[in-house]
Amino acid sequence: MRALAEKFGGDEEKWGIIGLLHDGDYEQTKENMNAHSAMMAGWVEELGETDQELLEGIRSHGGSHRGEEPQGNLQWSLFCCDELTGLIVAVALVMPSKKLSEVTVEAVLKKFPQKAFAAGAKREDIQMCEEKLGIPLPEFIEIGLKAMQGIAGEIGL
Image 1 (cartoon, rainbow, N blue to C red):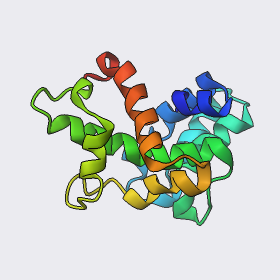
Image 2 (image 1 turned 60 degrees about the vertical axis):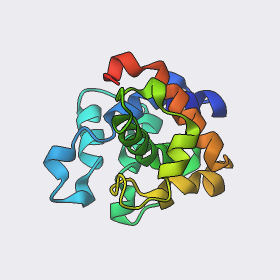
Image 3 (image 1 turned 90 degrees about the vertical axis):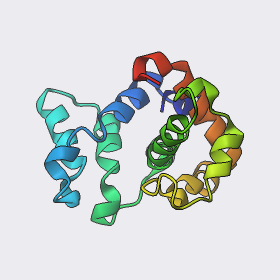
Image 4 (image 1 turned 30 degrees about the horizontal axis):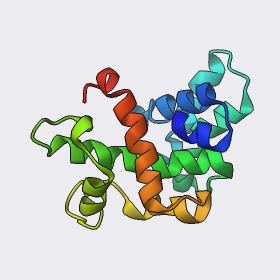
């Protein structure tokens, strides 16, 4: 999310926080996905957060379960890259070293059409990067991959 914020001239800190927090309520909402991410946004608001862009950014993640479509680059970035990060991690985990440093854009693109591989990563959501963000799929994968490689030590990959 920080890399996409940089690309779009957004607030890298805010976008990064949204990226970190959007699934924070998953264990509590997995049986009621209509509440997913709305609960997390509520918790953050209860802690005193008043930034509506941040709160709506978090809330937007579960919006598809409530019939809501993401709005703007921040929300579409979260929508598209949430699935991409899972796919990139899956590609890393099948590498001999199990490290992001070994993953290439080409390796991700090779696995992309294989629906059985990382079956939970919704390719159609990732591909929305082209229509909604104006970023070709290979470039979008490169942005996400480079960003993840930059924090590989922090995420243990």
